[in-house]
Length: 133
Image (cartoon, rainbow, N blue to C red):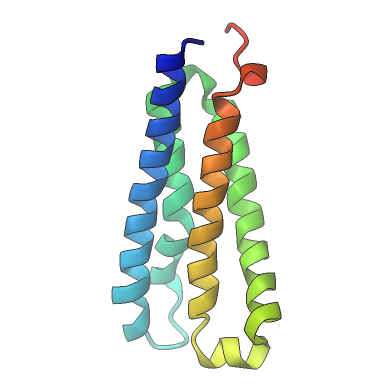
């Protein structure tokens, strides 16, 4: 893999995840504060937008590697949700998190998913994953 293709892959995956993060952040700040506590369906966008953007970026960069991209981004999605929940409980506690509407949780999900997407993009451009297809 040439250096130009590596930078293109890294750039497209990160651009997709940053666009997803921008969508998640705007939903977090404009939609989430106005929702009643029992309505969580609109908040799904916050949780899925970063991995979706990173996956679309990886498809644009290297479409023949879609399965590998989907697998790694799925791992990031899965563990970021549980990691954010655990960190929220450790940092502010269960009762304070519920009283605040879990705003820290959604912020941590976005941050963990962007960091995980950067790690996936780096992995997809590494030498070990670039055998000929």
